[in-house]
Amino acid sequence: MTRVRLRLGYADPPYVNCAHLYRAQPDYAGEVDHAALVRHLEATYDGWVLHAAATPASIATLAPLVMETGARWMVWVKGFAAFKRNVPVAYAWEPVIIKAARRPVVSRRLVMRDWIQESITLRRGLTGAKPEAVCHWAFELLGARPDDALDDLYPGTGAVTRAWESWRRKFVLPQLSLSPPKRHPEDPPLDMLMPEDL
Image (cartoon, rainbow, N blue to C red):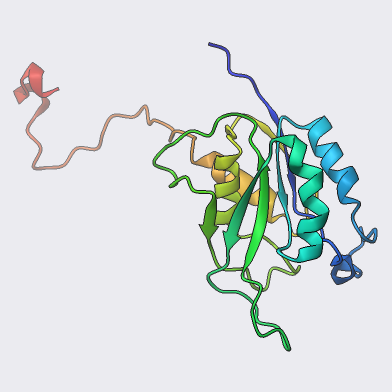
């Protein structure tokens, strides 16, 4: 059976009405056109991930855009989240919209749920950098395989690309040594071993 290498898109853009937080970045381009982004994800990729904010404006903007795509709304729950002045109830979860490229495989790598609890990252140099565990969870729900191609559309700190590389390494078998095993003084001589012992 031939395995097909799929193209995957990972979008963690500035959230709706939050682009001003990234004004100092060299690639700052103002508010993201989320309608154009969803069209691009659908037209270009076999499967994709889109991070979003849990604000009414974000959900109202994105819900009609993704309704016809077959993507599923997942949740990242932040066990530790940033509390902001004059916001009495913290924003401690975010939607993660995932259009699976293929059916996810249940394995021992991860308990498959439509949510993950993981604390936010700190001191990554950019607001909103995603934790490695959140990315790994998204790759699994995406139905990704280590030989697929992943495009990080908003690289920022490079956290998603690094997480992709660390996730892919989970599938690499260790190199086998061709040298004979080390012998210890208490081991019996090789000529004393019976064939069934070898």
